[in-house]
Length: 181
Image 1 (cartoon, rainbow, N blue to C red):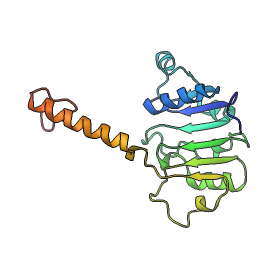
Image 2: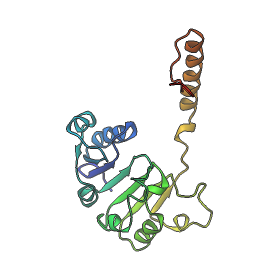
Image 3: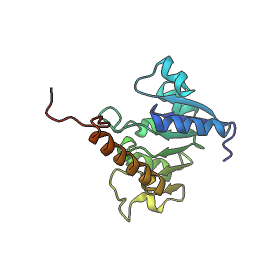
């Protein structure tokens, strides 16, 4: 599918969602978003209009899940939500596996109710060898290892070294205070 001119629905409004929005726009996509806490200020900061979740699912050609897992987001995308997607839609989950009901997603993919899925997170990790996702032609699977790149490792090491230096200088940053009031 050509992405130019298509609609990208982004679920979430954090730093990763913001980058996905930027990438979608760079590809010439119309971008809409949903979050648990929408506001006009956040919409301006993201550069994306907030819409109702059902509207996002109905209108999107590609849905990207980029929201934290919580009691409110566990199972956020189940059978009823998947049924709202276009038959040509693709859903991408790089957030947490439990946000999408995997059984309902497998059924939607097997029945060709949606075109496909891109997944690098699963309810059970590592993904069991005989999981239904592993036998579907309309699924792309990848390991959830973006944080393991050499650049990310170096950035984390640099932050740790800077934190130690600042702590020794009496100016702790990124500190967790335990047992203080």
